Length: 195
Image (tube, rainbow, N blue to C red):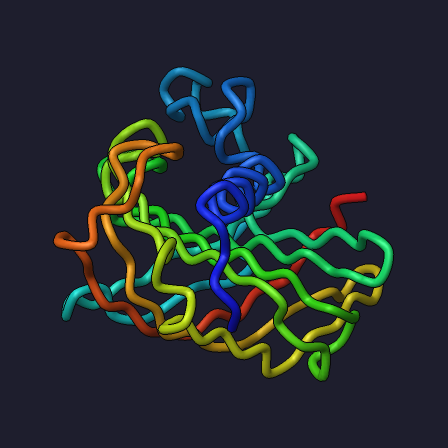
């Protein structure tokens, strides 16, 4: 996989968060359930499971029908398909802690399509705190899409990843090559068409 420029890597990660409604201040995920009075109906539609720095991780992808959003979405842009898979740890103190994200750009629209870019990120303490990303380690990142359907009503994706993630103080700072974690795992989830 070819290396991404720092700007392009950050743009992919931020676009993935926005597409999954994870970074927008007006999005339901940015507010706690208590702030919303517990009114948001969340439905588990998939998961990311794996290891982060030797520790087990399991996060759920979620649909929020009342909001018309999902943390696992796709968008077709010409011949490209962008996939955003953002998993939330159901055991975390806050929905926005322990979030793991895999954002994939494909040249095509099925499992045979080549992965042109992939951004893998881990947000242990929320979206506004320091986080870990594969920026600068793209050649060590492997994302394989094993199955992909973009059919209305049954869109889904399954695959696996291996990546080295380094700490970033914020989205536009350089990754700290001296503070990195290795991660690997699998994802399987339904997808919402983000037209």
